[in-house]
Length: 109
Image 1 (cartoon, rainbow, N blue to C red):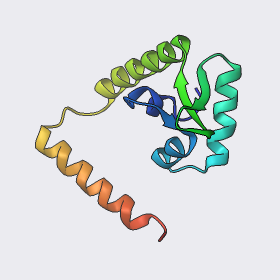
Image 2: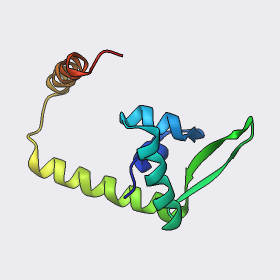
Image 3: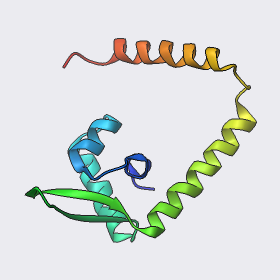
C-alpha cells in the first residue's frame, strides 16, 4: 500500500502531505508520488484544506481504511508468532534504546 496510509489512519485529524512525510522521515516529493498512486487506486482522498487553499488534506477512503486495518491485523498476527512475549518494562526499555540509537544515527539538521 502507498506509504503513510497507517499514519493517516492513526491520526485523529486532518494531515497534510508534509506532516505525513515528517512522520515517515521521507521527502515531500516521495510522499506526493505515493499519494497520487493511492488516489488513483481509490484508497485515498485529497481535498483542499479549509484554512489554506494552497494546502491539501489527506484522508483514506473506506477501501483504504479497510486495507490498512487488514494490514495492521496481519502485522499483529505475524508479530505475535515471530517475536517473543516481552514484559512491558522490557519492551519499554527496548523502545528507549532503539529510539536513542535512531537519534544518534540521524544526520544533523
